[in-house]
Length: 332
Image (cartoon, rainbow, N blue to C red; front, top):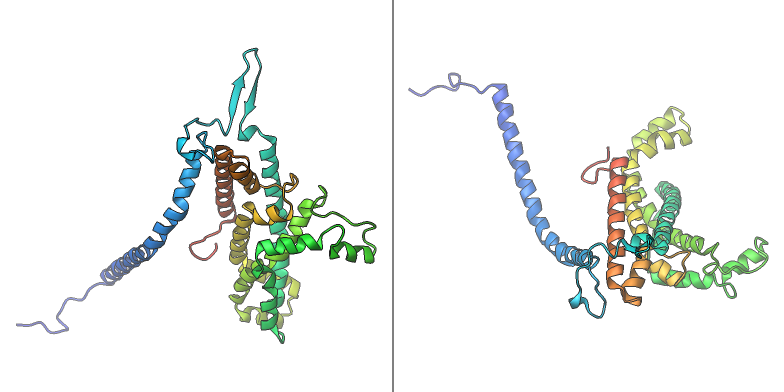
């Protein structure tokens, strides 16, 4: 005789929760598999376009390769990085990339450029983002106008600013002399005291809109009810910024900083065009390019490129760990 619905055994709450959890786990596993399936073509293209050249560059750094005879390269170990030569009379000398003052000068220039430019771009980008986040007439037009410097190609920006900073024909010297800030024209890109700052000025002008755009995206996610409540309670706007706005946009701010820092650490085109052959502004990328193609020291240039990659990777990982940046979900 068939059981009635009242006589059928009912599952306990624990069994129901267990079944629901198993269903969610299975759904999550299916989503992960689907995600990897969709990412597979991109990963293959990335491995072919970036992974293989990177592996080849690392390999060439352990050889004596020349640009004219890459196929005849022989393995020489860590000679390109560091080698001690014993002269046989109790003296010796270190050679290689890690013993070259020019390389360490390029490392310092790169780190200095990154720290100063990213710091200034973060501050100015935050100010611009706060202004663009406010309600005012014509806000959409102003947002589009702010992005113009970022949209201009870097080479064009560098040449444009090179003329503006020219010691004889530049408008920058003319303006500063008219208002009495300088007494004589300054060769901004050739003077050792001003060359790096000239590069930083151009970079800040060009990439501040990028920082402002990323920070503005974070500001758009902040609920407006928080500001209305703070206004009703009579909280000062400065205190609202430090206690409410800045903590809430911290994840977006950290991601913006790391993206901009990665670009700054591998800067090449701006410095190569604005201040060519200038030791005061030579970065690791410029140093590598010169050895790879101009000096026909392909193995030496490959070693510098490998160290540049390792430096960027180390700084990125350290920044993510120290700043507790969660690139997979919301920031902690």
